[in-house]
Amino acid sequence: MSAVTNPATVAECLRVGAGFSQGDRNWIVQEFATLDARLAAFHADATELEVSVKDREARGQKVTLECWIAGRQKIVTTSNEEDLRAALHDARDDLRRRLNDAKTRQEPRHNKHIREIGQPGPDQVADADLGRVDAETA
Image (cartoon, rainbow, N blue to C red; front, side, top):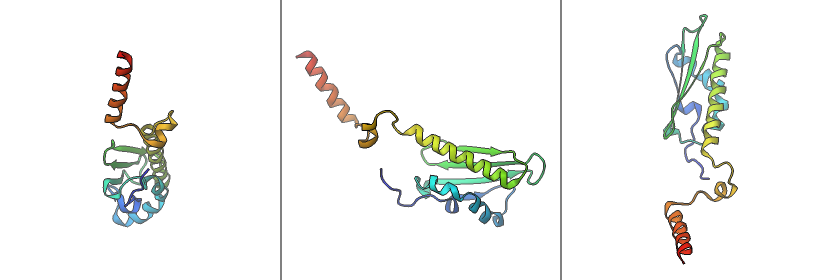
C-alpha cells in the first residue's frame, strides 16, 4: 500500500456553501477534524468537501455535506437536527461511515493472498489460462 504524498485534510478541502459565512469556516473545520484520519488516504488535490445549510436556525433546517473524491461517486449526507452543531456532527459521522463502507467495498475480502500481494495483472491471468489449456490437451 502506497502512502499519499499530499493527504487530504478538512482544512484544505472544505468549502462553505449557502447558509454559512467564511467566518463560520474555522469552527466547522474544528468540528470536522475527526474526518482527517479518513481523508488522509486520498490526495488533497483530488478531494473536495462542501457544507451548506438551508433555513439556518429555523425549525426544519437542513445541513448538507457533500464529498467529491476523484474516481469515486459523490457522497452526500444530510441532517435535519434542530441544533446546528448536532446537525453538523450527524452529517460528519454519516460521511465517515460512508467513506469506511466505500473503502471496505473496494478491498478484497475473503482472499488474504490477494490482499497481501495484489491481484494478478491481465498478462499473468492469460499465462495461467494457457498453461491449463496445454495441460488439458496433452
